[in-house]
Length: 280
Image (cartoon, rainbow, N blue to C red):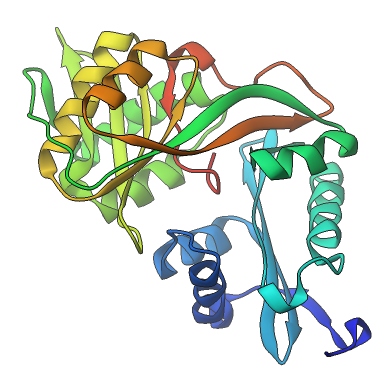
């Protein structure tokens, strides 16, 4: 086995995308090259190499309030040798340098590691999956167009607590056929976006003013068909019941966490689906 002293730690760049995808494929994650390119364009990545890329992490600043820690991946041959902890500490230190609150969506196992580091529980999430969910377009729902971005970005800022216009545009361009808005009397009541993935389409974020509005958007976006993953807020009980009736199965849990802060930076009442654990 190679010596840990032979490892090279370096910033991730565009030339590392294919190797990074291979790492998340090994882990069974859904990301594709477009995900890595977006994260590297708008965040800071760290890679660890021993010839091949053996570990990664990403820090994704979200406006001027917080930064998301994600994509901490270690290939199987190098696990349990301190790489994940080292990458996490680098992300935490960098967030502190930027004067941003560090946040993440932790797996159930990861949560036990992050609690002693000072991360606090905010609210639980669940990954849901369906192979062929049904759905139909509802009145008041239409496709999001370029001219909607300013209004959607303002709406999203009020929910997410950060300016995420770049993310919204990226997702809208990735899957325009699943980028939808709900309007009533000319007022935006909610929106949903999606992105193509290695295993299935990832639905989210979905933010709405009410549970009925959220379910209207979700039913509409699922009318496009195909396998779907989504990461839903557990506190939205009507949504959880709807997903079960629609044929979704719960795959695993996450916990939204913030470093040394136990109050949410977003508005949980209007968060129904997140963009994904790597994007917040």
